[in-house]
Image 1 (cartoon, rainbow, N blue to C red):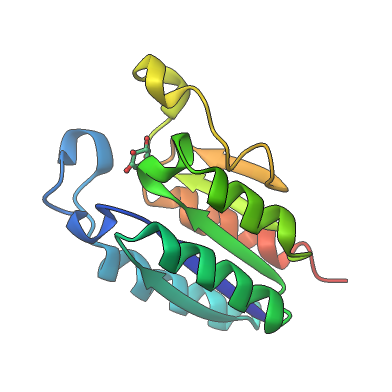
Image 2: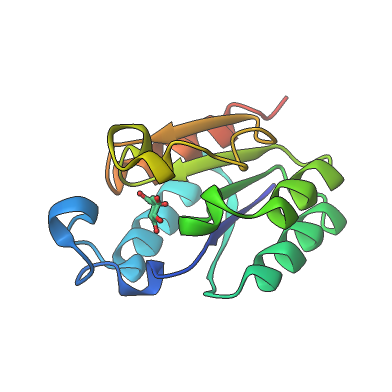
Length: 144
Ligand code: DQA
C-alpha cells in the first residue's frame, strides 16, 4: 500500500525556518524517518514538496489515480486559503490526513481556518516532526 506525503509552501526551508516554531529537523530528516517507519509498517511512502498550489492539486489527483491508501498533507499556508486544494481532496476517494508541525489554532487568527480540515479524514497538529509519524500510524490503521 502506498501513502503519499505531500508538503506545501516553505516546508523546503524546515530546519532553518523559524526553528522555535517548526523545530530543527529538515524535511529530508523527516522523510528519512518516515521511510524507516513505513518499512516497519509494510507501507510505501512517496514524499514530495512544492511551493506551487497547482502541483499539490495535481499530486492529489495522482494519489487518486494510483489508488493510494492515504495522503498525508501539510499544505502549509495554502491550508488557510486554498479552495482548489479543498476541492481536490473532495474530488478523490483517498482519505487525506491533515498534518501540521505547529498547532495553528494556538497561533494567529488567520491560521484558525483550515479548508483542508473541512475535506480531510482527520487532522494531527502541534507535535512537531512527530505529527508526521503519528499521521503515518493513522494511515496504517486505515488498512483493512
Ligand atoms: C504549518 C502551519 C501553517 O499555518 C503555516 O503556514 C505553515 C506550516 C505547520 O506545519 O505548522 O507553513 O502548516
